[in-house]
Image 1 (cartoon, one colour):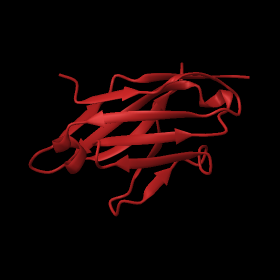
Image 2: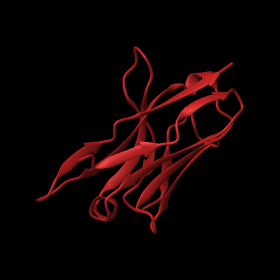
Image 3: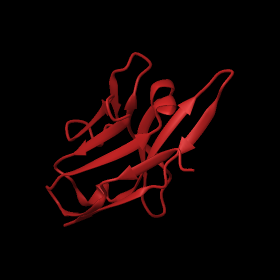
Length: 118
Protein backbone atom coordinates (compact mmCIF):
# COMPACT_ATOMS: atom_id res chain seq x y z
CA UNK A 1 0.00 0.00 0.00
CA UNK A 2 1.41 3.36 -1.04
CA UNK A 3 2.11 5.62 1.89
CA UNK A 4 2.19 8.80 -0.17
CA UNK A 5 0.14 9.48 -3.28
CA UNK A 6 1.05 12.43 -5.49
CA UNK A 7 -1.07 14.09 -8.14
CA UNK A 8 -1.21 17.26 -10.17
CA UNK A 9 1.71 17.04 -12.57
CA UNK A 10 1.42 17.69 -16.27
CA UNK A 11 2.53 19.75 -19.23
CA UNK A 12 2.43 23.54 -19.02
CA UNK A 13 3.91 26.43 -20.96
CA UNK A 14 6.60 28.61 -19.45
CA UNK A 15 5.06 31.19 -17.16
CA UNK A 16 2.19 28.91 -16.28
CA UNK A 17 1.16 27.31 -13.00
CA UNK A 18 0.57 23.87 -11.55
CA UNK A 19 -0.45 22.59 -8.15
CA UNK A 20 0.88 19.32 -6.81
CA UNK A 21 -0.78 17.35 -4.03
CA UNK A 22 0.63 14.68 -1.76
CA UNK A 23 -1.93 12.70 0.19
CA UNK A 24 -0.86 10.72 3.24
CA UNK A 25 -2.50 8.76 5.97
CA UNK A 26 -3.36 10.75 9.06
CA UNK A 27 -0.68 8.90 11.04
CA UNK A 28 2.04 9.81 8.58
CA UNK A 29 0.80 13.34 8.00
CA UNK A 30 0.74 14.22 11.69
CA UNK A 31 4.02 12.58 12.66
CA UNK A 32 6.36 13.24 9.76
CA UNK A 33 8.58 15.90 8.35
CA UNK A 34 7.24 16.31 4.84
CA UNK A 35 8.55 17.98 1.73
CA UNK A 36 8.85 18.02 -2.03
CA UNK A 37 11.87 17.01 -4.07
CA UNK A 38 12.53 16.80 -7.79
CA UNK A 39 14.81 14.94 -10.14
CA UNK A 40 15.56 15.97 -13.68
CA UNK A 41 17.13 13.53 -16.19
CA UNK A 42 20.82 13.07 -15.51
CA UNK A 43 20.70 15.05 -12.29
CA UNK A 44 20.54 14.20 -8.62
CA UNK A 45 17.33 14.46 -6.67
CA UNK A 46 17.14 17.84 -4.97
CA UNK A 47 15.05 19.50 -2.32
CA UNK A 48 12.39 21.87 -3.63
CA UNK A 49 10.55 22.81 -0.46
CA UNK A 50 9.86 21.45 3.00
CA UNK A 51 9.06 22.63 6.50
CA UNK A 52 11.53 23.47 9.22
CA UNK A 53 11.22 21.85 12.61
CA UNK A 54 9.34 24.97 13.69
CA UNK A 55 6.84 24.50 10.89
CA UNK A 56 8.01 27.31 8.65
CA UNK A 57 8.35 26.77 4.91
CA UNK A 58 11.82 26.30 3.51
CA UNK A 59 12.60 26.66 -0.20
CA UNK A 60 15.43 26.00 -2.58
CA UNK A 61 16.86 29.26 -3.86
CA UNK A 62 15.82 28.37 -7.40
CA UNK A 63 12.11 28.38 -6.51
CA UNK A 64 11.87 31.11 -3.88
CA UNK A 65 9.16 33.60 -4.71
CA UNK A 66 7.55 31.26 -7.24
CA UNK A 67 6.61 28.11 -5.31
CA UNK A 68 4.55 27.81 -2.15
CA UNK A 69 4.36 24.74 0.08
CA UNK A 70 1.44 24.33 2.44
CA UNK A 71 -0.37 21.78 4.54
CA UNK A 72 -4.08 21.00 4.30
CA UNK A 73 -4.68 19.51 7.73
CA UNK A 74 -8.28 18.59 6.98
CA UNK A 75 -7.21 16.41 4.06
CA UNK A 76 -3.84 15.18 5.35
CA UNK A 77 -2.28 16.64 2.24
CA UNK A 78 0.83 18.62 1.45
CA UNK A 79 0.47 21.00 -1.47
CA UNK A 80 3.02 22.62 -3.74
CA UNK A 81 1.75 25.60 -5.66
CA UNK A 82 4.09 26.36 -8.57
CA UNK A 83 3.85 29.66 -10.41
CA UNK A 84 5.93 31.36 -13.10
CA UNK A 85 7.19 27.97 -14.18
CA UNK A 86 10.37 27.75 -16.22
CA UNK A 87 11.63 24.99 -18.52
CA UNK A 88 14.34 24.23 -15.95
CA UNK A 89 11.60 23.29 -13.48
CA UNK A 90 10.84 20.24 -15.61
CA UNK A 91 11.44 17.11 -13.55
CA UNK A 92 9.76 14.27 -11.73
CA UNK A 93 8.51 15.68 -8.44
CA UNK A 94 8.46 13.46 -5.36
CA UNK A 95 6.81 13.84 -2.01
CA UNK A 96 8.78 12.65 1.00
CA UNK A 97 7.82 11.87 4.59
CA UNK A 98 10.47 11.17 7.21
CA UNK A 99 10.55 10.48 10.89
CA UNK A 100 13.51 9.76 13.13
CA UNK A 101 13.74 8.26 16.58
CA UNK A 102 12.34 5.04 18.01
CA UNK A 103 9.88 4.90 15.14
CA UNK A 104 11.72 5.96 12.04
CA UNK A 105 10.95 5.83 8.36
CA UNK A 106 11.66 7.49 5.05
CA UNK A 107 8.81 7.26 2.57
CA UNK A 108 8.79 8.49 -1.00
CA UNK A 109 5.84 8.91 -3.29
CA UNK A 110 5.78 7.42 -6.78
CA UNK A 111 6.58 10.75 -8.40
CA UNK A 112 4.65 12.98 -10.76
CA UNK A 113 6.04 14.40 -13.99
CA UNK A 114 6.14 18.15 -14.52
CA UNK A 115 7.09 19.35 -17.98
CA UNK A 116 7.43 23.04 -18.80
CA UNK A 117 7.66 23.92 -22.46
CA UNK A 118 9.43 27.05 -23.69
